[in-house]
Length: 83
Image (cartoon, rainbow, N blue to C red; front, side, top):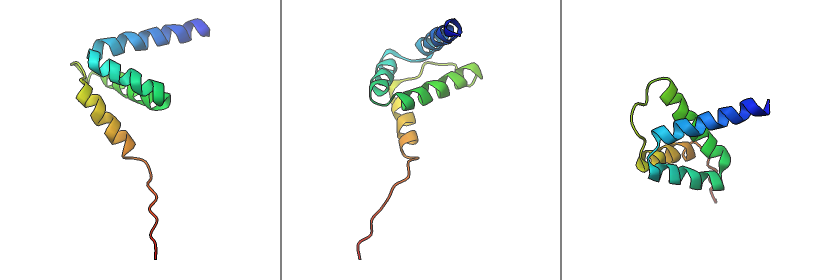
């Protein structure tokens, strides 16, 4: 169990090294420190795109920022209206 989980993690890191630029990797690691669940979602999304053949180039830092903005804009916002 632990060996297969370790192997999966190594495979994830290998794929992410292939598809992320150094600045994008740095940005994603900073996000991982603050919000690990958000970083995991982004990693899963990028790995899905790569394995399905939809991503065949290096992802830049600007694209990571764009993904972060799109994911953070999906949050429900509460607005208080004073009367």
